[in-house]
Image 1 (tube, rainbow, N blue to C red):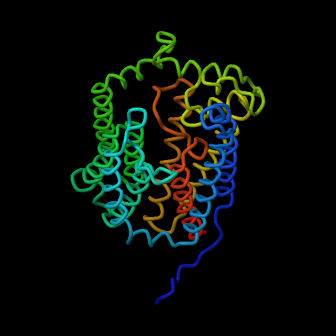
Image 2: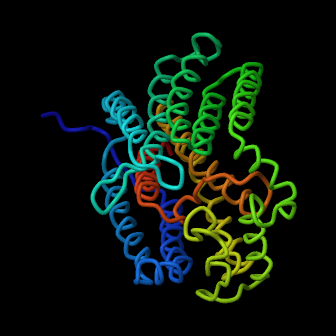
Image 3: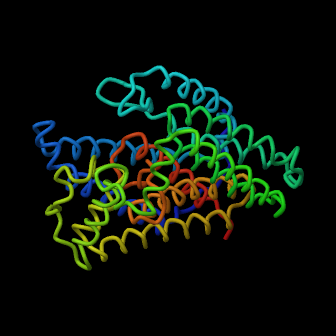
Length: 366
């Protein structure tokens, strides 16, 4: 068996440290946000803490394994990942619905969310294919359309769950990767128009999405209906002020904000840790984005550049959307806050994604 001649340097310690701090904050905030409801629902105030802690440990071990594995080996596995992910996305459509959506595949005490895998599989596919395509990426028919079709296919399967939020994330990330790869400005605006039209169509075809879209403009128009969650989120931020009401003392987590440990956990951060805590988390995400872009710019090949950009974009887009939603800056969607919101699949696969970026950083040009 031939040994790899790839020389590995040190990982990007700043990126690694930022991610570890975010994960630590996430585990603590999941416990704080869920302790009240889990005490009454599960008879154990530490129920979600135990699970999120276990997911964090599993994710960190998976990330460590990925860091030690040359990212070029992913090329040979990409097609397998794509096929398996399609199978999982089809299987999940036949699983029992939870809160009106079929997004998880039960696996004993845990559940797998295939859409979390799909986000990164699309990035792996695009990075591999674009590297081989080269200058043909400047052609709309041969360089751009195939990626829109493939990404659109995965997004369509996710949309059937239904999960418009993650489907939108996939298409936004696709556009970012294409732009970085060298897509022409004219084609880029054409893509924006197409995706925007599909997004509008997706909203109009589902009345509940249209209600969500309009409710953020004036949540007080329907305070007990579509505007309820956003109003409670804004009340949480208002109560927190600059310094917060102190960790663990949130009032909004006491059945005012539904499932406060998931998509709206940033509201609990704002209430308990105040503007200071929110600013710290935003700064950490900005550092992650900065180091991800820096790694992409210093990568030794196109494949590494596109992988780093794509993975960083997945994290960045979700963070921006989540924070915008809970602060009333855009319509309410179900996008979790990476590394902070509760969710095993999201945490494990996000950490594995960062592990790939860290592996790329080990092989960067000086």
